[in-house]
Image 1 (cartoon, helix red, strand yellow):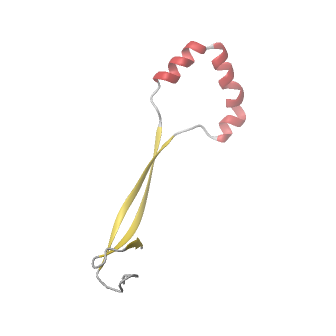
Image 2 (cartoon, helix red, strand yellow):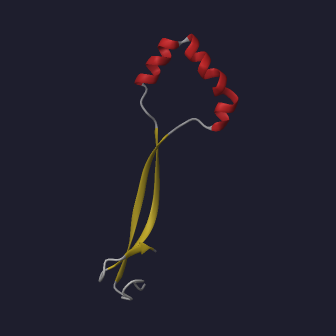
Length: 82
């Protein structure tokens, strides 16, 4: 592999990971079929239990990992996606 900036052949390639945490939510199908009427009714009739659930329930997260190859020139330090 050759560096695009200095045309050197002294290039190393490394694998890196991009890690993102996203909140896990209910899908659009849930809200179209059930959520639009169920959630307001639960809050209307079970306000205190729903309040406790909303406060004390642990947050749900979804981990998203992507692998990328990055080439780094050892002479000039230029880096790019390989």
